[in-house]
Length: 237
Ligand SMILES: NC(=O)c1ccc[n+]([C@@H]2O[C@H](COP(=O)([O-])OP(=O)(O)OC[C@H]3O[C@@H](n4cnc5c(N)ncnc54)[C@H](OP(=O)(O)O)[C@@H]3O)[C@@H](O)[C@H]2O)c1
Image (tube, protein in one colour):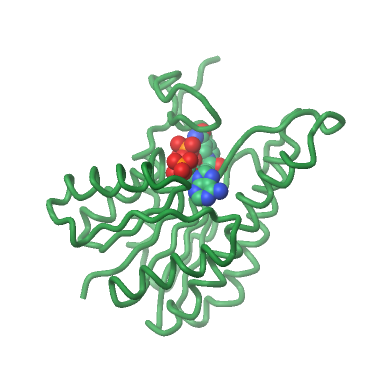
């Protein structure tokens, strides 16, 4: 039986690279994004890499909306017959100095990066428990431990995510549900309006992070890497 994976924010960047790797392992894979064009483009591209459109599903789902997240999880389970792996990857950057940070911007970042992960886990857990085992991988950031000026909302969202991940890990590890977070440094993607090519000669590639997800899935069952940091080995001086 092939494993079923759901990757939030898998239409591009790190999430897309994770989808490519999990498809190559034989998983059935669903990716989500905020637009129907992005979801359709990703579905088409991923189907091309694995040669089997039946194993790929692109869904529109804004992770800030708990009802939409519930629906996405139910759609995946109905299509593929269950769920084994949830990768909470969808995330946004941005921000401003606290005295100038608009309330809407604070909510956009916290609702996406932290509440969205809670909604995903809450919706997925009954299905992982029904399988008798599963994996949840949350995409945090080194910004969760290395806070920077102007990043209060983003850094707080990711620091909160680390604590959320650890609490959930404690709750469900005896159910054979393995919960981990990955804390990447700079990754060459279009995150937060950047040019994906900028710094690509020294930044991590999206696939470097995707490899960590694979390592987590392959790790022997008696041990649980609950928090993994990964950073560029040669950042500019
Ligand atoms: N790039 C870095 O340097 C870096 C470093 C550390 C951690 N991270 C973390 O890694 C994760 C992925 O980042 P990335 O660099 O791959 O970013 P990216 O290229 O900007 O991709 C972000 C993905 O998240 C989706 N997304 C954004 N808001 C969403 C929402 N409200 N609901 C559902 N999907 C949403 C986007 O969908 P649309 O296409 O529809 O917008 C897109 O698929 C994020 O959690 C980020 O914080 C990134």
